[in-house]
Amino acid sequence: VKDWGDSAVTNISALGAQQKAQLDTFADQLVALTLSNEQRMVELRETVDVRLRSLQEDNSIKLDQMRQTVDERLTATLEKRLGDSFKQVSERLEAVHQGLGEMKTLADGVGDLKRVLANVKTRGTWGEVQLGMLLEQILTPEQYKENVVCKEGSGERVEYVICLPGHDGNGPVWLPIDAKFPVEDYQRMLEARGRGAANDEEQALRGLESRVKTSARDIQCKYLNPPRTTDFAIMFLPTEGLYAEVLGRPGLADTLQHDHRVVVAGPTTLAALLNSLQMGFRTLAIEKRSSEVWQLLGVVKTQFGDFGGLLEKVQKKLEQASTSIENAARKSRTIERKLRDVQDMPVEDGTPLLLLQDNGPATEEGEDVAAACYEADEVNDLGEGG
Image (tube, rainbow, N blue to C red; front, side):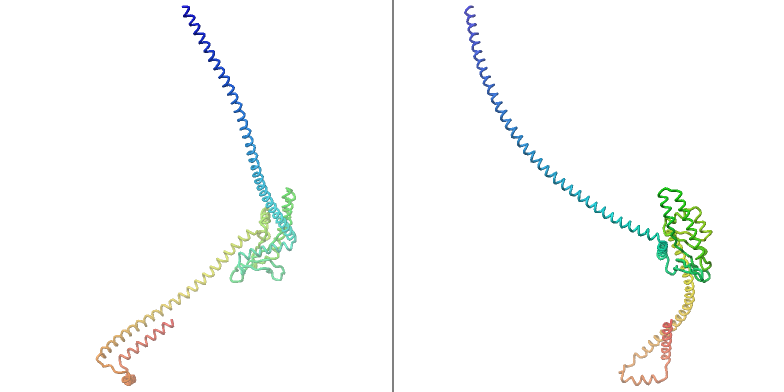
């Protein structure tokens, strides 16, 4: 037992020494491996650092290039867009400048028109011209006259009259039309209305009403002369605004019609009235033409009756001529049958015999043929005469 224990101790001691040796070897290998790993890690770190620095440098270079490219493109785009914007702004400014020039020209024209309308004579001429243009566009030259004296022995001439048809052929009846343009009171009314001054506006409207009544009284005294003229006249107001204001005054239109026999008309109203008169003129012309047509149809009817009698006579003559021609044809066939056996003779030898037969007595067949030819000539003469 003691030997076995010593042997076991010896074996265990050997085994421990062997394990220690192995552990020392393993520790040395571990230390060497650790040192190797540390060295490799250092080398790897250095390699990674070098690669990272190289990558950073490349990225910096590429970022600089990209930044430069983007800056160049942004600059070019910005310059182009700024150039286009400045060009559009320049064009718009030029258009605005032209518009301002046109507005200045229009303002000058409005000023000229205002100066023209400020002159009473020129303003009246403008209203007269507008009235003449309306009459010229709608009526024919025979349906109206210019600068007509309505009252004998008076020097007053109305601007225009419309020639209406009279009764019993006594000549036309004139409808006087005079243009009036009381613009001063109208302008004062518009200015007061723009300022909101109700009292000034009403005062201007009263002045306009008084001016219109005075003009209507003048038209009645100077131009109304029944039955040579109608018992009413037309006052033409050249603008629709002025006509609307006159028509809007309570009772003014009725007063002008009943007291002064004057009807107020604006451009649109006068155009409608002239169109109505033109339709009346056309209706009268159609009625006149229809009566003439009826008379012509009566004459044609009479002549057609005579023509029917003439046709009956012609028919009888044609029937007689047809009967005579049939008889002549029948007798000609009879003569041909009788002459079939006669021998032909030369023309030179037969001429004396024909002359002797012409001088001889007429036969019954010759008389019938001559009568038929005479009747045919009469029919031809009758046809040519018809």
